[in-house]
Image (cartoon, rainbow, N blue to C red; front, side):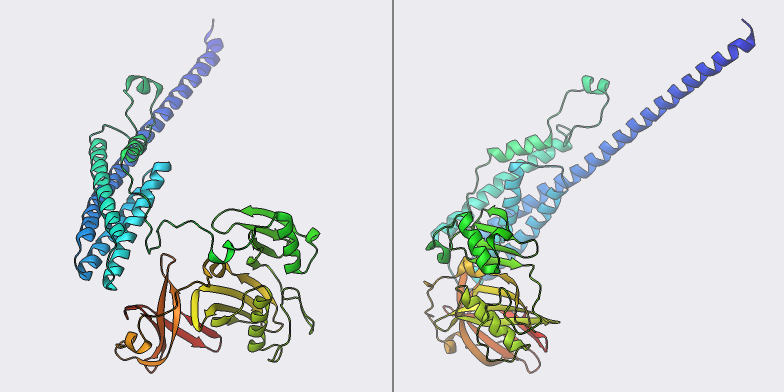
Length: 461
């Protein structure tokens, strides 16, 4: 066989050998990169879990301090430390590749621990004592925190000692068969949380409080509607045929509702009573003086196209749908659109939790949007509205540099969706105005807001 005949075969074999070599080198490179990535992730996970362990230890100390705080200053210091530690722990937990139901429990705990100590501090500052149930709650929370801190500290030590891993690493088949599988942190932490004694529900005056189930006082006395009945009610509300509406289904929750749409407007009605909870999507379609759908039109005393006309339209609309005795709290005008916030007034007491927000056209008075969830959730005719202190007694000491313009009795919502009877004091420092809220029971100033007033409206923050 001559050389000319062999040369193509030799070249062909050399090509395949070179290709296999290149592929082997690429596979090796990818394996090295994967191993490097595993090591990098492992280092980050170890650091984050170590931070979680350290912050839980700090949280344990803060909760224990809250449990034994004897003065308002001590309670505030403990709450500050607990909020800082719980926030840092949540950040560290978010950086870890962990999921599952038990991790939801851990997240709930981290949200509530700092928030609960803050609620205790607020009670201490206001001079309110703790009930026996509250003392039992903080003791249970402190015990749970100690057990959790110790368990996570042990897991952190195990991970640092390479006794477990967060996720399965990228390995070859040969490596997998040669290595003894290590338990994953996901499973170990889940098992750890399952073994801890829970601290139960925490019902307190805070953002992350477990909510007490139950119908709102207003809806409790109303009969539930079928979807067909709610559809008919929606047609009446939107001034259209029920057949032109599409059902978007029924929602569960504290306020079960039915939702309907005509492709442009969307309306959400409560299952009980068929009251409007949410309405949006309407366009200002009226160009003449005739009534428009969803306007609640009746006699007006103010000229059409003015702000008073639009506000009259708002009250008439709400009254037509069973919401009356409302007082305008704040409003904001943007072009031709008015956004107004109303609150219910009971026996001369303004009840801020019973709020309704409307969007209207100033030029026509047409209602463009509605949000009545706060009103439907909180409105009650059985509130205790008798103050323990007179306005003079509650407002003995005003903020330095501020003088009193007027005062009225009101109910304000708290962070935990509870209520406080207060005196609302409108004050000025000569340049700006502010609202201060004094407890009608203790005289403590529990909230304040600055008023922002302009030609476009009045809002408070």
